[in-house]
Length: 250
Image (cartoon, rainbow, N blue to C red; front, side, top):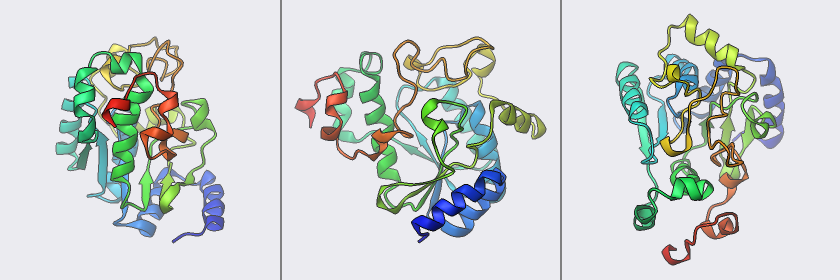
């Protein structure tokens, strides 16, 4: 176990390290109890590429929400096969199946926070229960929430979240992708700069923020994996934040 004081010291020291150096430290410290999460969009490719070069076989968690573009699923399969990635698909808990089927069309549009909690936050919480280190691809230039993040972030239960690309910019991602000839998500050239679930993602202009097409017009910029929502373990803890009546399915 790494002490809280050591985590803080290392997090500050890693501000001047490369993503590869941070990943190597994480693998040396936590393997095999370490995993990467990825959405398999264009901006995800550099971190995926680095991890496959440093530690082949590391589990890569993919949140299969049931709302993805077909292009995302096909791209994920292609990359997983070509790069020989150990992809582990994560799904919502079965207890929500009837409720979600009853609100399949309306849930992501009327209550995107609840939708994200059921399809992303809870499945990731469950997957990380037996993991000591979680590698994430967030960057400070993406959202105001992420701008406040640290490279090493202790989570509840002893989990350590590691953000190797935190100091990178969109230009850094583009440069690395070009240098290593990395593939792009099929929808990237159609204006989808950040690709999430189909009901909550639209194409944007070249001069817009890369996440402007996510939950556009709904006052939402995060799915909950990288916010305080991730610390909440039961729906009862967050029910007041949601609009849909879920009392009958608990």
